[in-house]
Image: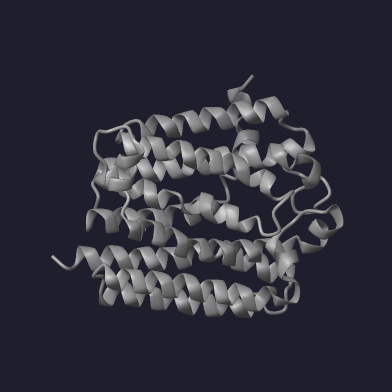
Length: 299
């Protein structure tokens, strides 16, 4: 049973004091929203996607911590998480996650049928990710899809009609939206590999599968390759979609940050890798700012 008296524990469970997680979700989603609407999408859709992002990331934390509770107790950084430590029972964490997901779904219901249909696919991917770490050598790729799924949903929310069908989704989500998702997946691979590098020793000992373990000594160069692929693909797509100077400047600022992250992760220290991960939301903000400024100043 959920209790208001246990609010501090719930806030800790959903990482309320660590907003980097939902910001990493938010910036590519807002970039897609602006691109889809050729500028400011209006307060309704902005509210839906900002609040929905926060709620779904929070729900995802509940699901992830329940799924990983037996593994997390063997990892120094995660051993004191509320579910792992026993401060929040599994049933209580799942109830909170369900409540948060329902609240997010309530926001989606104010949009249109294609967006609502896509939200179910997004939920399935969110539920699948915590278990992918048991069987997939690079589960960060699954996370990449989950953390990028706001992109097609944003296009559907702007361009979707009133029909409940796969054809309606296809009509409201143009090919470049899926290419933006694919490009964004490389950014997720970059920052979540940095995150995985923090726990590599513990994860190896307990048998967890991560990109940091799979890539081995190629982890640092591959992180930089992932950054390059993300920025190059978004630059190409943005230019094809008519984005200009301010967008390119935003990409440039993001590229400088990626180079700075190299200096943080090159010696593979826990502190440096964790700092690089936590600062990635500024890279996403730079790209979004370039998109928003370019579209906002062209008229």
